[in-house]
Amino acid sequence: MKTKTTFTLDNKNLTNGFQRIFDWIQESKLSVTSPKGKEYIKMPFVFALVIAIVFPFITVAAVILSLSNIIKISIEREVQVNEIKELSAHID
Image (cartoon, rainbow, N blue to C red; front, side):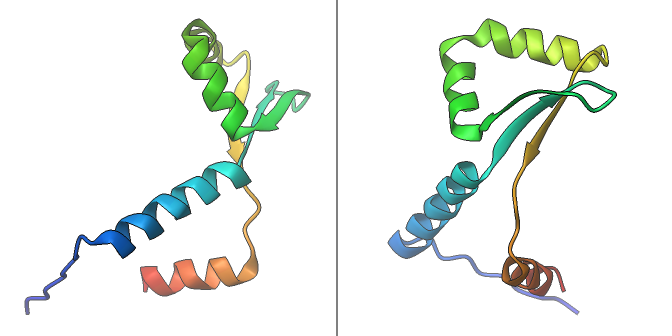
């Protein structure tokens, strides 16, 4: 049995897509912790992106430190209950 999925590329879809991306970036926080759980840095993800663009050597150093298990980098975001229901509806 074949199913057909159609995606129309129009102004409304593009605007909604960009808005969802910007909302996700604004609501997220970057956290740098030790493997034992001590928190070194917690900042908005937007600031982390700006720092990564302006100072790319910091990004390279952070990747090297995380690969060698000296630090742990995570992106955190609080999710509302209704967002979880929407996501599960899209998966089913």
